Length: 378
Ligand SMILES: Cc1cc2nc3c(=O)[nH]c(=O)nc-3n(C[C@H](O)[C@H](O)[C@H](O)COP(=O)(O)OP(=O)(O)OC[C@H]3O[C@@H](n4cnc5c(N)ncnc54)[C@H](O)[C@@H]3O)c2cc1C
Image (tube, rainbow, N blue to C red; front, side):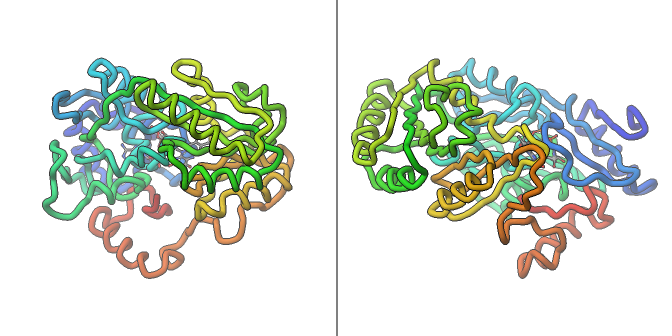
């Protein structure tokens, strides 16, 4: 039974399945999955029930030698990080508000941060998922071993599904070892155009960055570890590995970028780099009433950031992936979400894939109870 009329905190996966099945057979109220609640709900449903996963936070199995872990979906990212660290392992995805965010929420929103360029996204780490569909049916996809190739890859379907197809209850992740150190080289340039040229060199250079981040001058002002950069646009390149290896990469990168005449250069290593990693990860957290994310071709990142700068928008780009986060200045009525970047709201707007997606939704949620009004896109 719900713990209140509008929120339910199950303490076991079976209890949740029972609750969902009863709801599907009787009241048929909309169900909104909530992990840590760090993102504003994309859609709210009248008379809906929030299904809060906070009590489903157990470690089911951690065979450290296999470098996999199976946990319930409500585990907080900060807790998961500590558990993995005890075995010198990690999930290399940068997540803001890690004390609050849950694994299920990160998977459902397919969140990724600066290390996406070198380490990939949640889709690369989820090897098994248990979930409950809208009828209360419990199902599993993938498994607990890294080599698992049988059947449809439902794991990937649920990554980025925003709670519209099923409630994720348990996850098996493949893990990576903790590395000896990481470093961040930041370089301030006179213009974003110079940064564009420097990035082209970095991408064809001798180093292997795990993050290539660009901040426009407005964003630089808001990032405390970059105070020395005054108000110039910044190129920030991250490396990980053995200490000698990262030192060599940082030095090589600086030499490669010299011809583009950076105004200032600084290399931060180990714990000295932590505040800047954290600031880059937390940048998307809303600091204005209007925050946006757009995806473009990596080659278009700088052009878009220049347009944002001209409009007074604070913007940061994952330059290697073409993802840009921006915050409008307060009081701005600009509609700068850029042409063609608004998210589809109707099945028809999804084009030919919409038909397939509608059929998948119909299979898992025939009564349209899971976040009705939202599309399963991530
Ligand atoms: C400024 C900002 C805005 C953001 N806006 C959004 C946004 O609008 N939508 C978004 O999805 N992410 C958004 N994110 C990303 C999100 O905050 C991160 O991915 C976060 O790590 C999610 O963890 P959480 O536990 O807080 O998830 P929550 O905020 O609780 O939920 C995130 C999404 O996942 C779904 N969900 C949560 N748990 C489960 C589960 N167990 N099974 C199935 N679905 C589940 C929710 O319904 C919701 O769609 C935003 C992040 C920032 C910084």
